[in-house]
Length: 141
Image (tube, rainbow, N blue to C red; front, side, top):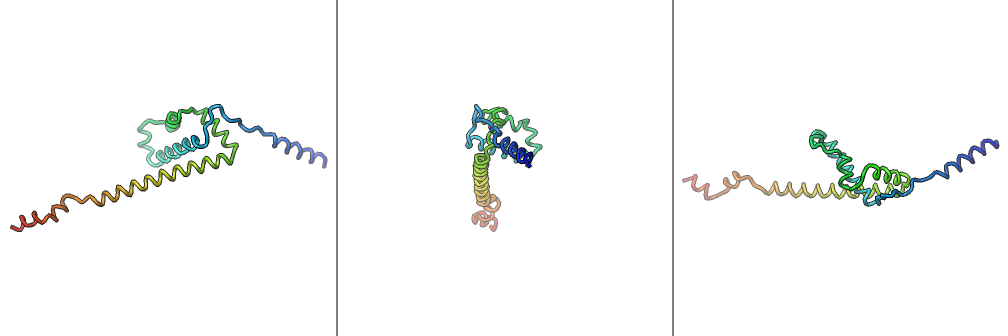
């Protein structure tokens, strides 16, 4: 019985003393990390939708993200590890990323709706000519 208690004690003490990753030197706050994640999701979606056209551009998704946000793979990895060990902050970052993606989605939907309305408003030239009463009179004579 004493051995079981000792093993449980060692296990509990050992688990409590787990070192968390320290804040990286090149720290990306939640806002910046959510920007990086949003861009990653958008690029992954673009690749999934039309892989052939994306491959023709020759752009590497991660290289584009790193260049756009002026980071490198090490900075991204260190910050990702930092947030992975802090679930509350990670969840906040993911929720902010989702909000940004929803804003982009709504913006695209509104733009498509405007373009559809403009398309409906444009009447083909032939239809306008058929309605033109002067042309109809000339044809009757």
